[in-house]
Length: 330
Image (cartoon, rainbow, N blue to C red; front, side, top):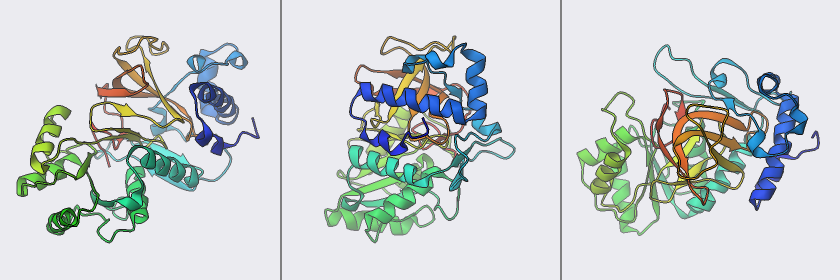
């Protein structure tokens, strides 16, 4: 396992190769992450007989709040942290290889959205300089730089400039993405109505106490009316992950080939559902988490479809999700 190359995850082309790689990553992390080893040993009698994804234990996401989850002796390149209300314990992700994270989010963006250079990417989020340690804002900062468009930047404190630039870009027929936290997007369309049918709006969820929480369907309806668009897009990611899944303008998320979703039973957390379209709790396999833990039991309620797309239906508790379509704590 010492020679396992983390870059190999990006060469996965089939479910069979994914399963083989995931099992190899599991045995590597079992050998190198002491906390995960202790957790697995408490559940499994003979770890070395594990040879299928369905047999791998998933680490509860809450451990990222209390422990340093690493599978390497390398010093971390960066520590990503979730945010929360005062007094709330936050998750920390010790990232040993920022290159893996960047490779992961650039590849996913290109697959599900397009080449950043083709877009002006405007953000209604705090800047990375204001909220250092946010994995979402780090990603946005890199995507905007890759865009190379002069209007690609953070606008949370500059909404008048944002309004002017959105209209200017529409007049120029420039492909444009507006990526924002929900309350700021709602504030914007209440300030001014838009007719921007070609605009791609990505909402990261979350009212951060500034507005009453609302159902995603209502939020999307208001955003579609306010911007004059036919679809609203979302991204599913977390502080604890290095990969992201994207919607295609509907409710279902699609993951890259090195990320996979499984659904566990709500009443028996060690049992995975074998049926599709059945509600349960989301387990994530994120092979980009090579130097951390790739097998994470989240607190999100969801369901899985036959094509391996999935829906996020709610939350079991207030765990710190990052940049998804329900709550954002950045």
